[in-house]
Image (tube, rainbow, N blue to C red; front, side, top):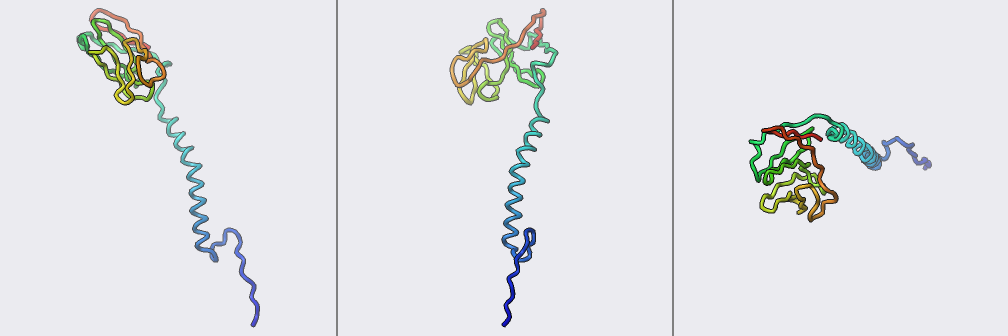
Amino acid sequence: MRFQPAVISKPGNCVAENKICLWNVIFHGIIVLMVAVPILYAIFLYMNAPPNIGRSEGYIQLHLSSLPEGKSRVVYYHEQPIIVINNHGTIKALLALCTKKDIILQWDNDREELVCSDYGSRFDLNGNVKTGLAPRPLKSFELIETGDSIIIRS
């Protein structure tokens, strides 16, 4: 009987080790995905980011007839929701997103405050936090009254 030496496979030679090679391919594929997916996701977020509202110029004009006393209205200014409130003839414009999480706020006319439906944060008419988990006040917008309409500017 003759002794035959064992065949030692070289790295990359999957003929002798089909099962082990398959697991190596799967393992390396998972590693590549773990690196590539976060990078591609970051690029996607960067490409789809909304424009910075603070650097944009322009305005919105609203007729006062579309905002009766005690009511609010959400308008979009540079793709950001702005809530315009008519409270006893005093008109305010505030960013309509809760500062805890970007959830559109609702105007509670009975309590005269803005309410976040998810986290329970409450804001006064000037945008200051009254209660809840909101970390900072709401951004307010400059209003210019021109007879029968108002102009909202950043």
